[in-house]
Each structure stands twice: as structure tokens, then as C-alpha cells.
Amino acid sequence: MIRIRIDDKHFGNAQVLGRVHFDIAPGECVALVGPSGIGKSTVLRILAGTDEAFTGHVDRPERMAVVFQEPTLLPWRSVLQNLTLVHPDLGTAGARAALDRVGLAGKETLFPGQLSLGQQRRLALARGFATPPDLLIMDEPFASLDPETAERMLALTESLMATTRPATLFVTHDRAEAERLADRILRLDGAPATLAETT
Amino acid sequence: MRISTERATSPRTVTVLSILLLGALWVVAAALTADPQVLPSPFALAAPFRQELANGELLYHLGQTVVRVLWAFALAMGLGIALGLVMGRSEAVNRWLDPWLVIFLNLPALVLIVLCYLWIGLTETAAIAAVTLNKIPNVTTVIREGARAMDPQLDAMARIYRMSWRRRMAHIVLPQLAPFITAAARSGIAVIWKIVLVVEFLGRSSGIGFQIHLYFQLFDVAMVLVYALSFICVMLLVEWLVLQPWERRVRRWRQA
Ligand SMILES: Nc1ncnc2c1ncn2[C@@H]1O[C@H](COP(=O)(O)OP(=O)(O)OP(=O)(O)O)[C@@H](O)[C@H]1O
Ligand SMILES: [Mg+2]
Image (cartoon, rainbow over all chains, first blue to last red; front, side):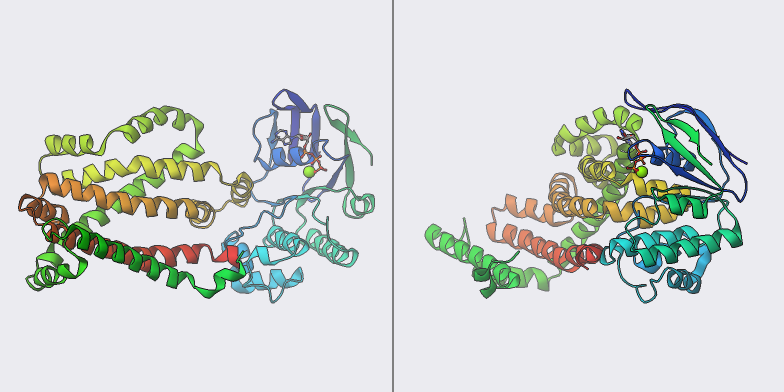
């Protein structure tokens, strides 16, 4: 069971998060929504364990995959290496297949800086999906993609969640996207932000 | 950006012309001095150069100095990079070590050299230790700046995907430090060989510095110049054959 018990999160003197308590069951997909600047990415960072300066505690599994709000690639390594260096078990063939799934076949030898932003985001998705995690965290993974590509990525995410069933927490601004993927939608609201369950 | 008037001369031509200009200045200065004892013309150096080359002296002393420079360079870069990385990543370590860094940065090279010879003795170890200690603080300062500028997002990514320490170093940390390492290496090698010469001058019986000491006592300006220029040529070769190609390689992804 994944347990999030945030009681207080400050940046300097400004309190960003108040009481944010929720659980994610194995295989469950939870969407996190709320206005810009409310603290959604902050909740994800705390869950991922990259921000440890908060009051409260979090139980999380070992094997996690994160798709950040920015692509967060290694600009000095090729597209293919961006997968194989992070997932050594994948092998070149596995990495090529992963690239193919997100529509990046043929871009293996380019550097990330030579991809469009949408392509970089898809590479970040491929990295997140390459090996099945126990917990998948995604921060607006389908932003800045055209409707068809977003649809393809959504379908890919659905099929991944159907086959490997990771517990998932993802942030979105798109109501339809949240309803389609998530079993449950959580809303952050107020200052400092607290949770309001909507579904 | 390139302005159209610059197109006529390539960067390489400019380098060659600039060096030729320096040579021309030297010829003029030698002619004006009109005393080969004080400033021989560049052409007057050919005979002593050939002689030193033929009797093996030049290559022997050049080799000795190169070995010392390489040792000191490798040690100073290795220790300086490790120290700079730790200090740039940990504010606590930095607070403790920063005063040491300031003290060593401001310790004159000569003081360190003399102390090393006094404490360790007139040995090869003392010579290399003195040069290394002189250079570490500079490398550390530069690398610390680079470590502070590293992207925390990439760190977070590596942590979440549980990348091994070796992979993080090779593919996340070092690529971000590369421009700082090149800067430290470039200024490092230049400073190191100058200090090596002083170390040899003061307490070794081989190397360019030792030979310069010898010909200084004989007041043989031509020989001093022959030895100094030979080493400068070696350094230029290192710059063109090692440093610049390496720099181009690590910057490839930026230009792509
Ligand atoms: N490192 C930081 N230092 C100071 N304040 C920060 C920091 N990171 C975030 N904040 C503040 O915390 C608040 C929440 O930021 P967060 O990135 O979590 O918002 P968000 O809900 O993800 O917004 P968006 O939908 O625009 O991505 C913002 O007001 C932001 O200014
Ligand atoms: Mg955000």
C-alpha cells in the first residue's frame, strides 16, 4: 500500500501544502487536479522522495518511474542511450521497441536537443514505461502534444496500465483525461492547499 | 556569428600569422639590441638547438620535466575534481573546508616548494607533492563552481530510476562538469609546468628547470631560450592535439 501523509510543506516562510493524506492501492490509478501553482508537482516530488523537507511521512515502493513536467533528459547522450543508460536491462533491442511504441523510431542517434518538445516528452514517456514499475508518477505527461499524438500516448498509457498494473498518480488539467484513466480524482484547493476528493 | 569581412582569413591562418608576427618582433628586437649575449636572434638558436638535440641532453631533460608535469597534473586534477565535487554538493563540507582553500590559494608557490623540500627532502616525491599542492586549490575552486551549477532535476531522475553510482558519475555528473574540467585543465597545465620549472631550479638535478639554472649561472641566454622554447612547443602540441580535440568531442552535443 502506498501511503501519503503530508501535514505541512513550506518553501521559506510560505506554507504551500496543509494536510494532504491519501492512499493508493496496488494497481489503482489516481488523478490529481487543481489550479496552476497550487502544489501538485510538490506533492509528486514528495511522493517520489526527491523532496524530503516536509512534515509527515510517505510509504513508497522501491521500483518507481517518474515522468516529470519537464522532459529531464540527458542532453549529452543520444536518444537511444537515454533509455539504455537508465534501464541497463532493457538492451538495445528493447530500447528500440520502446522508441517505436512512442513513435520515435529512426531518431535513435539524435541528441535530445535535436527533438521537438513534443518528441522529448514522448521520449520521457518511453523512459517511464520501459520497465514495469510498482509506482508510476506522471506530471502532465500529455501536455503540449497535438490531439492525435496525445490520443496515441493515452492509449499507450492505458495498455501499459492494463498489462503491468502499476499504482499510478498523475497530474492533469484535462478533465476528460482524468476521467478516462483514473479510478479516483483528487483535487487540491485552498491556501495552504488541502485535499478535496471529487469522485 | 560571423561578419562577412572576417571570411577572408580562416582562424588557422590567423594563428600562424600571429605567431609569425611575434617572431618578427623578436628579430627586430634582436637587431636593435645588437648583442647576441643579451638577446640572440631566433636564427642564432638553431645551432645550439641542433647540438643539444644531437647529444641527447635536450630530450632527456625534456622527458624528465614532462613526466613531472604529467604526475602533478594527474594528481592535482584527480584530487581537485573530487574535492571540488564534494564541496560543491555539500554545504556542510564546504563550510569546513573553505577556509583551508582560501589559505592554500593564497600561500605563495615558493613557500610550499621550500617547505616540501625541507620536510620531505630533496626528492622526486617532494617535487611532485609541491607542484600538486600548489595546483589543487585552483582546480577545486573551478570544479566547485561547476558542481554548484548542476541540474538538481537530473539528480532526482537518477535517484528515482536508481542509476548506479558509476553511471551517474559517467553520464550525469562528468558531462555537466566537462566545461569546468577543461577550463581547469587548460589553466592547470600552464601553471603546473611553470611551477615544475621552479621546483627543478631549486632542488632537482634534471629537467628543463635544472638546465635553465645551469645556463643562467653561465649567463648563456641562447641556451636558456632553447630549453624554454622547446617546452613551450611541447605545450602547444598538447593544446592542439589533446585539449582542443577533447573539448570538441565533449561539446559535440551542443553543436548538433
Ligand atoms: N523550489 C521552490 N522554492 C520556492 N517556492 C517553490 C519552489 N517550488 C515550488 N514553489 C512554490 O510552490 C507552489 C506550488 O508549486 P508547484 O510546482 O507544486 O505547483 P503546480 O500545482 O505543480 O503548478 P502547475 O500546474 O503550474 O505545474 C508555487 O506557488 C511555487 O511558487
Ligand atoms: Mg506542476
